[in-house]
Length: 127
Image (cartoon, rainbow, N blue to C red; front, side):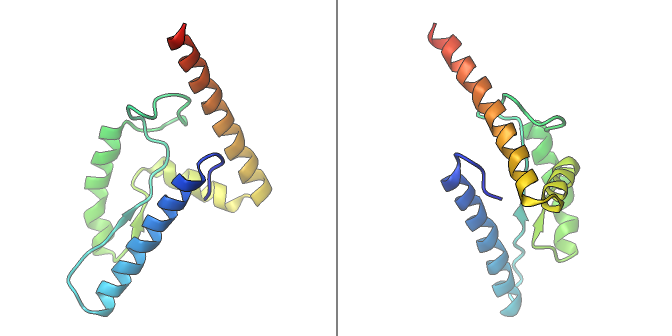
């Protein structure tokens, strides 16, 4: 799903997901014993993403642990992608189930809030 103001970032994420799934299918077709699993994240608290977080967003450490805990099972089940944080999976499912206009409205509101908070914090630092 594309994100407003982050077209290049969104495109890169889409590319990585598609490349991972395509390469996994090529490896299977060639009967190569290579497992490729794309991780689909949502909002994760990190040094570069620490304001206006989605409620329930995990820390980067907790998210990494969720990946390590769930990846082996996803690979055993033959999955090509996984969303290791349960709340991210719910959020993605809900956004995909909503009409496009409503999901876009919610995404735009979320990004506007995050941008306003980030701008206000930056202004305080320069004062």
